[in-house]
Image (cartoon, rainbow, N blue to C red; front, side, top):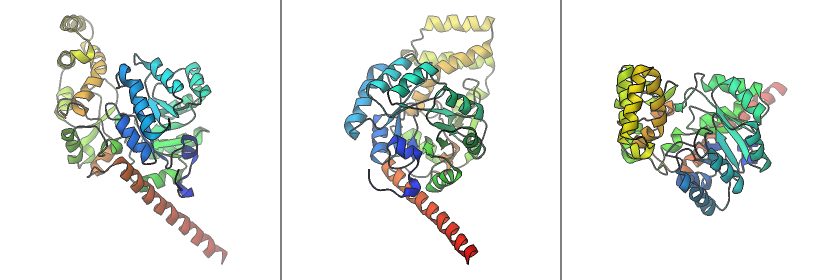
Length: 367
């Protein structure tokens, strides 16, 4: 590890073994081996998106990062509701990955297995009570995501949530939601965070696998109000870039929304495994029961393919575009290593200025 300013050395860098307290989060269809490699080589800490990597290819992706970076100094993200959740746990243990991240995560026993193998458990939460519960279950660190963040997000801004969680838990806290600059990193460290985590900013780099057409849509957004929360996808809070698909969902009746959901499943039935007969059966069952609830269930199951349509296939108006509000402040695609170096350099300058100001004030008071 190259020498870095002590101002940027935190419990995060010490425990994760990265040069800078900057984490690249696990974005579905975005956080692949290449992005994690670029992040690692740039001195940050990256997470593979285990939820959207095919189970048969997951081990190969892990090995690709290990071979390219010379070690297992990266993480794996997964959700316990995915079919291969235990495969993710076993692979993290097998290759002694530095960390795992998750939302609604594993039980205390599974967390205990990971910790016993030396794998740090770093859940992401959007509310104070969830942070406290995660620590009770054994979390080694906590990532808090404020409402400015993209995808599924809570309703509390980072500036409120971060100090609340810092006061309530005794593990290192990582701040996420609204970060893309060195000034942001400096402010988080000054508040007491161990570092920052960024998704949207890493997605908007030249190392991202996101198709050019989709990246151009993100770059075109200049108004943060166009990156807003919707409940239309699955009834939960999603922050996304406005597009034609979201407008269609939000304007649809429950029955229309159900049909849109089923049509999506039909269009990508190879990915979902849903046959036309099963769709019709589901549709008529929903008519008799609760079409509003059924549409949410089907749409939630379809979410990975809705993401795939925009983030992999390059049709930004036919899928969903998860995004933090910070996308409106980003106007160029630089490499992940250049991004990390820029953020670290700016943060160091800000913190040095803060220290100089404090020292000058102390000298003035002493004279």
